Each structure stands twice: as structure tokens, then as C-alpha cells.
Image (cartoon, rainbow, N blue to C red; front, side):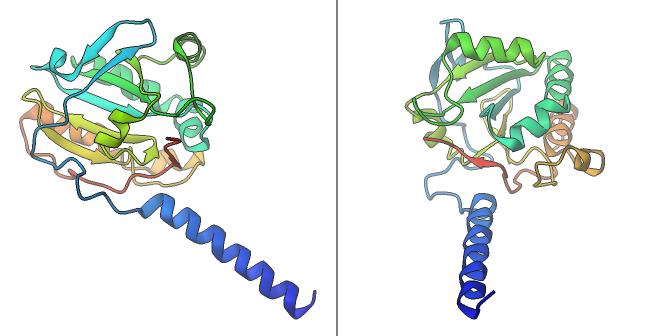
Amino acid sequence: MSRRDVSLALGAAAAIGLTVFAMLASPAKANAPTIGQPAPAFQLTDSNGATHSLNDFRGKTVVLEWSNHDCPYVIKHYGSGNMQGLQREAAADGVVWLTIVSSAPGKQGHVDGAKANALTQSRNAAPTAVLLDPNGAVGRAYDARTTPHMYIINAQGVLVYQGGIDNKPTANPADLASATNYVRAALADVEAGRPVATPVSQPYGCSVKY
């Protein structure tokens, strides 16, 4: 390989590395939701055509999960059953789980209601509802940057957690066994009436396809 070819290869590798780093560590926007403050209000239509607003769930803990079924990081959690297990644990404790799809029409991960329902069935998923956000308004209001990107809102409507589902920013299901699940831990803190020990973590995954 010539010196020029080596230089080009190194440059390409560096570019890829920077892209991945940006995916993992892009800074929050100035107007991003703040822990300890009211979560942004929203109203969205679900996969069955029903309308839901955040206010409908006041008095209950709410989990928001940004999703893109074609993203390898999302596939890691659904293919392993990890996300579905967490959804069912949450439901057993009376937690509302809202999966939100903010992929724009024509972009990776975009779904209509029928496709969303088919995915829920085929993956044996158990969200309270799958909400469709094709114009990305709610995703941008929450500064959702990756899939998955997770948020927890307490019964008073206050944001108490935002970030990654865990501390293993890979698409490898084998890493789940040693992962610290931040969402599970935060829900346990909320259930016990404790402040969330880790209220913010670094989200990781594919970029939201606005």
C-alpha cells in the first residue's frame, strides 16, 4: 500500500471514529429539558389512532423510549428481550411506558400505525402505547438524540431521569449481562421515594432520523 493510500485509510478511519463519537457524545441543546423541572407537555396519536397527552398520565410514573426498529442498538435490546422485560417490569409496578417513533417519512425507522403494531406483536413488546411523531416535534422538544434515548417523568410531571438505557454503548447483546441498567435503577429509586441516584447519563445509539 502506498503512503498516499495509508493516509487516505487513516483519514477515513478517523472520520468514522468522529462520527461514532458524535453519536455518543453530542452535547444537549440549550433548551433541552432539565432534570427537576416539569417535562415538556405533548400530545401525540398512537399506533391505533388514539390521542394521548402527557397530562393524561399525571399521577403515574412515565417512561419515554425513543425507538427506531432498524437501528442496531435498538435491535440489541429487543432481539435479546431486554427492552420487553423492562417494559413488563415497569407495567407490573403501574408505570406507563410510551415508545415514541420520531423518524420522518422516508427515513430509517419510520412507521405507520399498522407497521408499529406489527412490530409490537412480532417482538412481543409491551409498551402502554406506541406514539407516532413523524414531524419530530416532540423528539426535538425533549432533545431526543439517539435510539434508544430514555426519559422518566415522575407522578408530579417532573423529569427525573434522561439518558441511556445502560452503561454499555455497544450494539452487542453479550454486553447486557454486565451492564448497569440506569432505567431500572431510576425506576426503583422513584418507587422507593428516593432521589434518582443517576439522573443523567450519556445516551447512545443511532441518531434520531428527523
